[in-house]
Image (cartoon, one colour):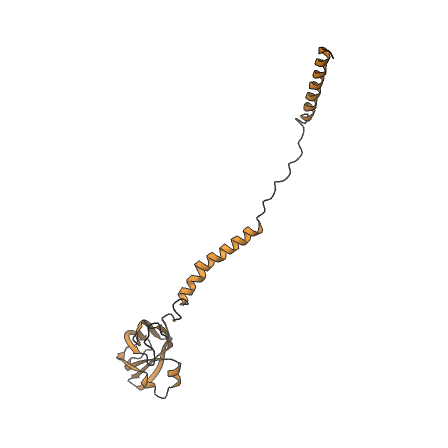
Length: 194
């Protein structure tokens, strides 16, 4: 093959390949087909399960566990110290130590009480009501209506061991100018020996 023939052959191949490239780009100015929608990202199931477990753990540490401490679940089985007063009465526990409940008690019955005594009565004491004066300890000589007084109540039959819990009722025994003795429930108590 001569040099001229080789040149002509190469030129034809180049022109042909250029024409193919132009044909491929001949879509310029024409409308393009619409693009396919973006692929949606899917969260794997294990990630959702991990998020749910993390939420449960956070709820346990910030909601359930603090409630257990407030309710006294972790303090050796002892009850939280509280006094819930009956209507017309006030009660507040200062301490329970050596078998003695130190409290602030008050009444708003509209009548002044004289020769007033107080008692802690648990279920055993309430069942043995044949000698109620046994449980009463002399509190104060008088308690005026709408006042609060400091009172020490001996809890009979209770253990003096630290951590011992009691639960029962505080009762008042009193006289008025019109007679007595009168007995009345002041409040419901739970306390732990310190």
